[in-house]
Image 1: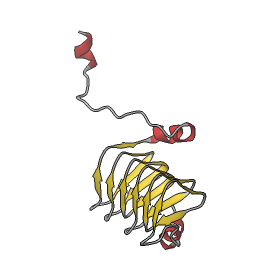
Image 2: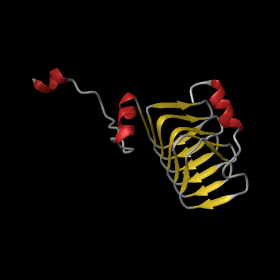
Image 3: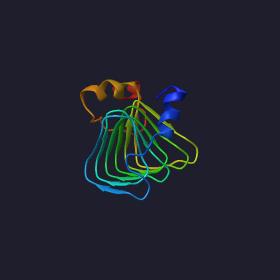
Length: 143
């Protein structure tokens, strides 16, 4: 979704789950899609996914490219990119080779990003946990 036309097409796409609709269960999407209603369950998108400002997903989301303007409560994984728009409210783990958090977006959780995730996305959706801690001084440790 790097070019402006594809992004604009997705923003204008007809919703698969429209405002006021509730879907419970597994949602499998083969083409680019937009969710403006509420999903309680897993969402798996083989292409680009937009969760509109009125959209809400309670459960894990897997997509090639995910753009969130609404609410997600669950882990969000993308094989290419995740974009959190200013109206996004996400609770969960973000994992993608590229992450964009626009000013005003809300994230409660953790992020994993980088080129290594791009190669892992082809073989497995599971990413290694991110370790945090003070940098190690190898000269001090060896002496």
